[in-house]
Picture 1 (cartoon, helix red, strand yellow):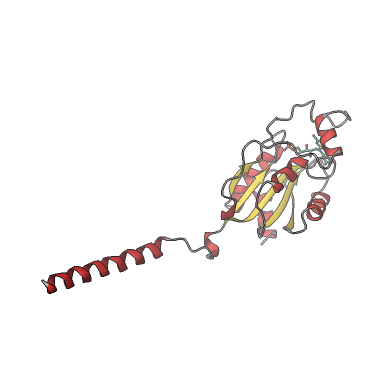
Picture 2 (cartoon, protein in one colour; picture 1 turned 120 degrees about the vertical axis):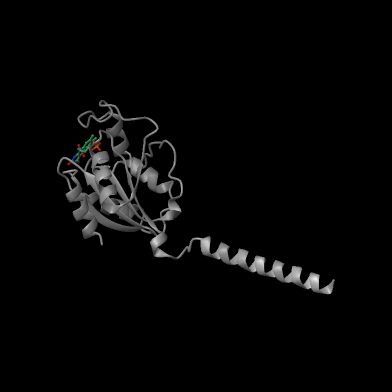
Length: 191
Ligand SMILES: Cc1cc2nc3c(=O)[nH]c(=O)nc-3n(C[C@H](O)[C@H](O)[C@H](O)COP(=O)(O)O)c2cc1C
């Protein structure tokens, strides 16, 4: 009888050890750099930045996330010649925060986040501020990119750096060609 109990105890101890071992193996290592991913998050009112973002996601082997306004921008909203248009009013009030549809889930899995937007009035649209403020980006490298009629992304990056000095910023560049080779060159520059 004693022998049987001993055998059962030994079998149980062995299977417990095997079980805990396989569990350790399956658990992702949180500090493993290979486990971290890249995200391309973008806002696009008329599709230009969206195309650039798709090329960039390909070039960087990254996930893609669209920052979508709760209320899409109409042509009238985008009329910069009209001081009363939605974009003019929002950009004049740097504290405006247009509502975003949905939220980025699982931000923790990314260590590099490209943030892209059309240049509006030489800087980033305020929906970008809304996105940054509702997403935990602490400790991640944030790289700016944009499309524009010619303005660079420099002032936008400076403005974002000074609004969020505790985040880690890098200036990416313009992707006005919206080509894969242009996006690949940007990714290379950021290495
Ligand atoms: C309200 C508004 C302001 C703009 N201001 C600028 C600007 O200051 N400099 C510039 O080069 N382009 C400016 N543009 C042009 C856009 O940056 C450009 O068309 C961009 O590629 C549009 O991207 P999207 O299609 O992703 O919205 C402006 C466009 C709009 C609608």
